[in-house]
Length: 260
Image 1 (cartoon, rainbow, N blue to C red):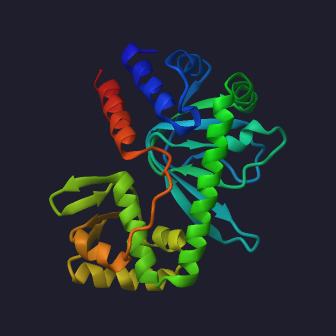
Image 2 (image 1 turned 90 degrees about the horizontal axis):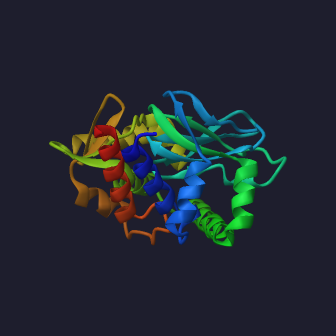
């Protein structure tokens, strides 16, 4: 592997919350055991109901986490960004994935077999503590989402969702803050648990007001303050897996590796 690419991948490992607090030598050993996989857009990283045998970190690209309900409906749970992990459940033998994760653009993923992950837990107890913290945070996120579903208007939930996505996948553009994800109205409806009709009507009203602009499955926030006012008081954000400063360093490392 090219030295600059290897260095970038080491940065991803060291900054991922699963491996937080480990010395660089341990992170290097963990990286050495990884396999780099390329996942074309539209292909799955993991599939709901399949045996959980792989843990991974996305080092390039974005993915969408979904779940099928018992009546066959698909629910979008969240988007995974560069630097985020998936498949921690693979540490337990004979478990199955409760969700599907699909690449929304071409992805590169560092992968470890479930047995390798279990060995890491034994060798580095800090990983077990980190994993427990991640599970607690995910539970808090689910509780917050459930509370929002019960107490907030669709407009408020939609505004919060766009602001969250802009925070982790946004980039400056002439029209405002562009959410650099393939993001259709149906995707947003699934993400916030609303009907497509209501989401479409709300986005159209916001577009007419100049709050957002959209096209080709991309949305840009043109009037950030107006959207923040609709969203209301910001909730404390439990970790979205990578802190903003760490995410910036990860993206810098990625671009350096790609330019090499």
